[in-house]
Length: 363
Ligand code: SF4
Image (cartoon, rainbow, N blue to C red):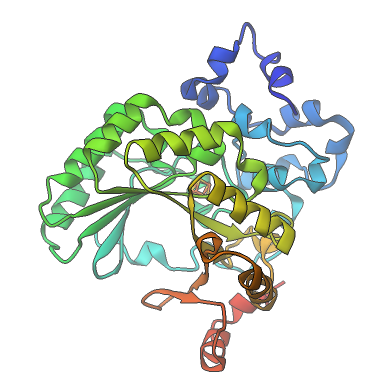
């Protein structure tokens, strides 16, 4: 689906509008009927049903939709943003919150799971609803509440918790906010003397790269040391726009790392994964983690087996430079950290088997 066709759907829209992140947000595709119209025949495929969006709403920026180049049922970008029948037919016994994040919030929306760092969920809203998201539970009823109250709660908790030296600003996607609001979050968190490092987790470079503006980079630069973690899952997402966005962050002195998710049909072959990792390296984005897809309700069809993931990464390890290799890990409830999955020991395997749903025993 090319940019010109998509622009022609909007009255008087120009290329300049296309490069404006607010225009992208305002004009997100949220209705299956629009997608049907765009993709025609291909859309009669059973994966596309209106009733899915009643449970897991759809939201796709025109930019991200323009990255779909293949038949919709065989495209790594479509797989990540177009609803799929299997979201409501497979893995229905999986939990909605497998890491039990909601039980680890000492104050609303702040997850404190590790001693020295915490995750501040500043919003439930995202530019694109990634169909594999492990926080799909937020989409149905986004409870944004009062922004100032939420931020105030974070700051008060951080002031009482000097062991926290790193705050990860996440969501949702924090870059959904405008510069002013985002700066109020950064400034608020920086008032806490014990916070040394801020990390931002955002998919904007992949799904709405025009959000990375000069002004945003100027703001972020003021709050260094600040690290930026993003999520590219397919080489199809590594466009010139995405490369420009990452480069702008890097030129502002902000290291950009990638946390991909291993997704069936998107990046679960050696060729696709190699192309993603080499592509990231070429734009100076560090492949940091490859997460095993969590057993989240509505995401079963994305999950590969751990064994096939290990085999793929071990084969890539034999041929790729260490700089291109992320750590393949699984997040497990109740564990203090992420478990590395390459060269996994038999005792670790046995331990993981306790968490049966990690081995796809549910239908
Ligand atoms: S941007 Fe992140 S939080 Fe938002 S839907 Fe995608 S994976 Fe989930």
